[in-house]
Length: 185
Image (cartoon, rainbow, N blue to C red; front, side, top):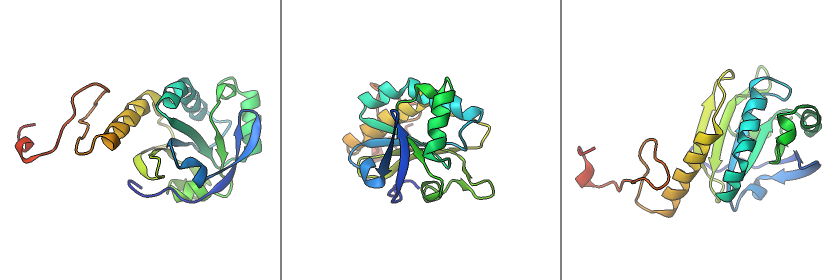
């Protein structure tokens, strides 16, 4: 998926108390995170979506929109939002993918269960995947680490020829690959 364009889609979403249509074209033009999860009304999923919400302000300051995606309908997203303390805090769009178009497009559909693996994707403004992380169902993700990855991806995008080393944090030194560095790191 790295350096591939996101699949085309048009789906219903639950966002800020309303149902909305969101398309792949709506995503382009700014940075975006897609956070796929298996199903509403489950166990690990609400902890991840709530964690993402806790960092949503940071993502917004970085010019990143967050989209959660499951194969549930937008009606189920609303019902979950209305009944779960964790999910009631969500202010980013919750995309409904009941046909599996987006989930299959990102190649993380568990066909036997018609559910997604835990996949997180960072998309650049051109609609191209720059980070892809996939977890097994029992392993939750960290939004805090995704903030770091967003900063690294944006830095690399804005600083041609520079790369970010392992565990790079904003403000730390980067690398400029060259013959002089070979064997020196």
